[in-house]
Structures are given as C-alpha cells and as structure tokens.
Length: 399
Image 1 (cartoon, rainbow, N blue to C red):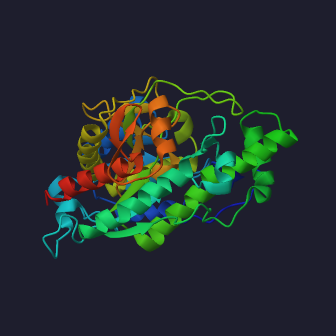
Image 2: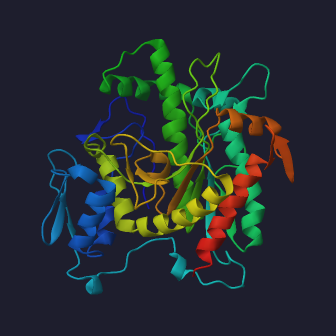
Image 3: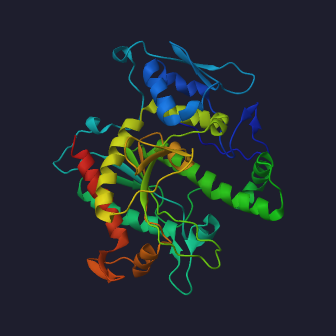
C-alpha cells in the first residue's frame, strides 16, 4: 500500500527527488512485490498503449528483454523490475481487490459478495465556492456539484445493498475528510507557484493554497482511506460535468450536454518526470487494474447511455486517449483516480450549466416523473443512480 504522509515543504526537492506538491517520496522497494509478475510484452503493451502513450516514458523507463530500468531520484541507481519469462511462469499479482471472476456470490443477488467504495466527487457545502464547483443564476437554487454527487451516492447505497453489495462512502457529509486547511499550505503553495514560474502575490498564494487543499490533500486522504481501510473491489467516482460558465458573478448557460467515463492513463512526459507520478503510474500498471476497469466501465457506459441518451464528450489534444472503440471511454491522468490501488470507474455525466440539466437540477429530487421543459423526466439524481446500479448489476451478473 502506498504511504500518504503529507510533506509540508517549501520546495519539492527531497533528496534530489522531483515531487508534485504534497506527494510523499516513493519507496521504490514497494515494487519488489511485483517482481516477475508479468512478461515484457505485457508490460510494454500497457506502458505504451495506455499509461504512457507516444513514448512519454522513454528515458525514464527503459525496457530490455528481461527487465525495466526505472529512473528513481536524480543521481541514484535505477530501480530494476524483472519480467516473467512467460505468462505461465509469472508470479501472482499481490492486490487487495478481487476480479469479478474471483468474487464468489453467497446468494443469487447480482452483487452478492462485491465490495464497493463510492467516492462522491468534490466536497460541496461551504467549500463549494473555493472548489469552483458552485454557480447560481439570479435567485435560483445554487448548483453545487459536491452536494449533488453526495445525493446520488446516498441514493445508490440502498440500490446496491439490495443487490447484495457491501458499500462504503469516502465521505458522508459536505465536509473534507483531510484535517489540513488552506492556511497551513501557504509555504507549499508559494513553492508550487515558483516552480510553475508564476507570480507569488498574496492572492495567488491564497488561491494555490486552496487548490492544494481540495485537489491534493483531500484526494490523498480519500486514497489513504480506500487503500488502507476499505480495500474494495471497485471504486465509483461520481461527478457531474460542466462547460465554461464565464464570469462567476454572471454565469452562462449553454446548449451542450454530454457523458463520458475516465480510466487511469495517458501520462505525459512532463508528468512522468515527477518521481511520485512515475511511481504511482507503475503501481496502477503492475496492479493490473486496467482490464477490470475497462470491462466494468463498458457495462456502465452501455447502461447510462441507454438511460440518459447523452452523446459522448470527445477529447481534443494529448491529455486523454480513447479506450477501445468507444467515444465514451477515455484514459486520463487524474489524481482522483490514479491513487486508488484497485479498479476505478470514474463517471462524468450531465453538463451542470446546460439549459436542460439546469432545469432538472432546479426541480430537485422526486419519485416518479415530472414534466420539465415540456418533457416527462425522472429526477436527474435517480436517473443517475438507477443507471449506475443497472450497469453494475449487468457486469457482475457475468461472473
């Protein structure tokens, strides 16, 4: 399991290691458990096809016929990962999670024996404005993503439990689970801004401190909970999407509405130059979560596309790569999914500031159907929860 001790440093150079803000210095010996667990072909296919496409890892991870030489801290010897000679001789992959085929149901219910963690994206509540996940049109009900994801999560719990799943939440209220607050991160924020070549004004330091609070400290604390305590078979990361709404004091509604899913992958060269990101990528690759993530996500995508009728969001540029032939499923490097050492399904439906979605959010949660914008529709929260539950039931029914 990764160690997530937070480092309050003014510089990200620790024993010549280049680290991202608040990241712990990797203990490369933790990879010893993965020695000879996969072949050179398997390693190279995953590295070049999903995790570091376009040769992003070249010079940082050098692959020979028998081993991978992985750069650690500058000036130190590389870490050597030995490959299995053949798939048949490969050692078992050490992991806390179970593949679908490894979960033995104890009842006839679709999710019997499955352990699921739900991560309601963001924090919400009084923190939503800091997170920039809050907007309001006139005197309408504020749109707060963190509150909305938690509402979906709480609707999902009884649905999944009724099908036999053991369900855990990473948070149950609109409060952070990290004990760190922005005021404690000013020194780290200053160093972060300097490393990025940005000005260190009082406002920029305040903004960067807040960003590190909710995008780094909070997410790392949730990963610590998932990997160290819950140890699920699958994590559901629930989000709502948005298009740019311009001036926060006068946000704009748009016509666009779409849906997509994210798997961990597509590290860039710049990202892999950070030692912690190199290490975290290798943990995901060696844990062999990708096949399970892909299969589960495909099942959810089919269910949610059928329920929502939403078109896919298409990424333009190098930050994400399409997974398989689906326009709905993409690999992307996000802290919020790469730190979980188990399969992750990361869901991004509905554009919150879409005119049609905004109307549904204003209608709140309700049973049955209502006429919204001249169309009979279910609660957006229940449509979300029902379609996720249906996709998981379909996937695990294939055991």
